[in-house]
Image 1 (cartoon, one colour):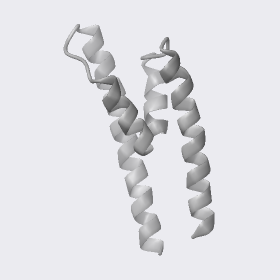
Image 2 (spheres, rainbow, N blue to C red):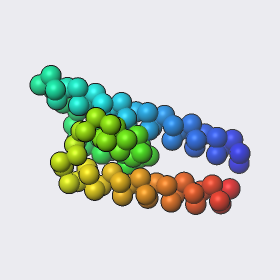
Image 3 (cartoon, rainbow, N blue to C red):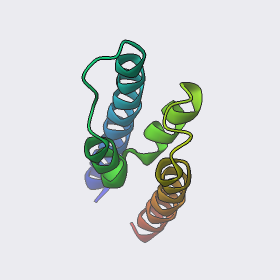
Length: 92
């Protein structure tokens, strides 16, 4: 069971790095008026566990902060994912 928990930690780390990178890259593309990363992709990564990385990047790069769906949705996902993470850690 411990190895399963270790895999969860690795997954969470990787998906949050991906979420952070996607938000950073989308901001850079926006500044250069290039083809953007779809919002659906940003949301998908956040929903499957990358909410913290996406939220931090949103704040660091001031990206998507005027979009209510992002400015309210990402923090809610961070809270939900935190609760789930604590629950899983206590259950194992």
